[in-house]
Length: 321
Image 1: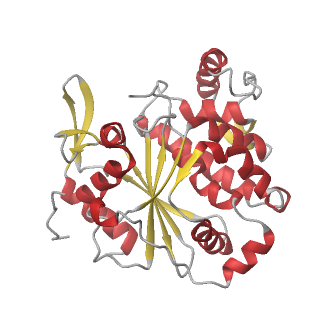
Image 2: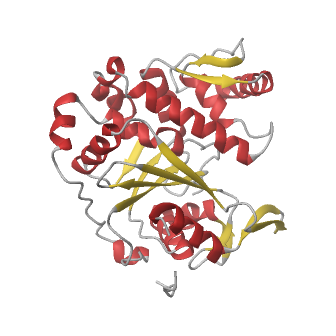
């Protein structure tokens, strides 16, 4: 971890969805024949053309492909309210997801220090990748970015998902649904209140979106936990034979809401590896407990991390030491 760090129109803020559909995107890009063909190929991810400008750590093993998953509203300079590093092992398809808390207070090249989710606002996706690489000594040059409506459409397209919902969560979801009926008439999906709660509740697209967006009920930590629960439910449903056969139709429903520099063959190869081992992944949240302090800075609630300690923990999590 001793590498020296080199110095190399705001949108509405409702985004919280990147984690929820990023791996599902891998699934919906696949059809049966392509899946079989891709399984026979080694996974090769070509570095982005501007990788050198992103301050990537070229010493990291290429056994793991690290992809930044971003969730934000439409607009090139929206804040990325969801930031997750998806690490995929090329040989096995094993997946590790690292959530970066949006309130994490870090240095942003050229803009002083601020919350990590403001990097996209200041300098777009490239600055977001560069910030993560500089702070955590990573090698990320590939990304997938989605706007919030993509999530609702993909959940609707796969026939909904079943997740545990508490009574308090149900009430919060219905309050959000009331707002979404007014704010998002362009989303042509049902916007019905949820009337049940329990250990397994069926959610349609907009209800799942409301579940993902719950914020004021508890904490940002619980919010990210709900998002990961939804992600797992989406992956399991999308990988089922009945849904898998219509993968390209699902992708067609959401492609206008996705921005990525991953080539189709790269996605196919990764997807084949991931699906060959089933739906399973390990998770980490940055900053980790005991490595940060909660502070009020410039009127904002921030998580001020021990950056070196979190970089070390991230490398240990992904690379095993």
